Length: 93
Image (tube, rainbow, N blue to C red; front, side, top):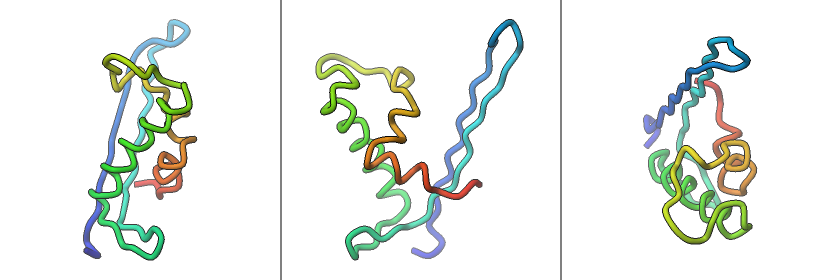
């Protein structure tokens, strides 16, 4: 379990104010302990992402019906949820 790590790399590229722009998000996530229980990186990252979206729906930030495209979820709002905060505090890769 000590060698367990999840890497996330997301990149977007396009134009902003007629200038080519690229933004990247690169992080690594390790096992964590929550309420005295150890969680593997793959377990808590998978669960936290689902829970963060449920939090956004519950708070009315996302629709409660229909299909929600992943790319329509505001990343800043995602990181401000209780579960999303776990992602925000990870070290840079």
